[in-house]
Image 1 (cartoon, rainbow, N blue to C red):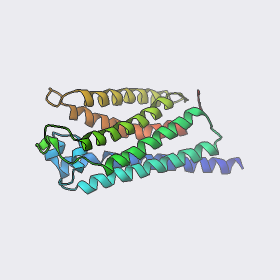
Image 2: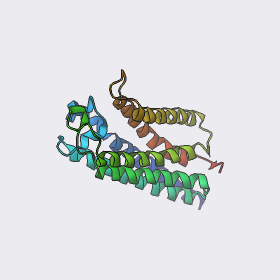
Image 3: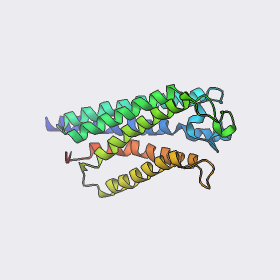
Image 4: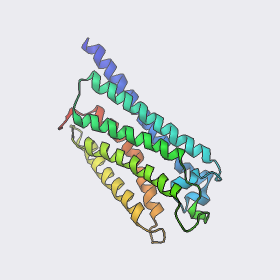
Length: 221
């Protein structure tokens, strides 16, 4: 009986890690912009790749939606794993909810893309409602991931290296996210550079959070 439960747990761990890695890779679809649309991505934010008149914009939208679907699958497998291992606490629940909110609003952000690419002079000087709406959805998505990050810090694990790496990446992710919002594009290091670092770190955290969940003893909450 115990062997069967162990096998089920091992299979679920593999599914959690596999779907989270797929989600991370799809979330990093903007890196293809350096090949498919270098004119925009070299001087603009990743969201500009999904503007309707940009080449391959449907590819970038579709990849974001598929990333969200992979995140939902990861949540399902994490929930099944925690249930199979009888790991129940508010800490784990907050991680699942935050991770799910992140996936949902990542998809919604993809479905409401920007209407122009400011980096190549397409936009007027006045930000539009669509602009604010798109970034509001993105901020909600980031807030969901932040909840998952904070709750992950409450987990007990013997893997000191993984949790130390997680803390460093999370701090960098949050710092770059804030800087991408407050730093003007005209500075020595423009805001879009911080946004790209933020996205890279976020892609790593998408995998690290489920990894720490399935290898945690329990949460402190």
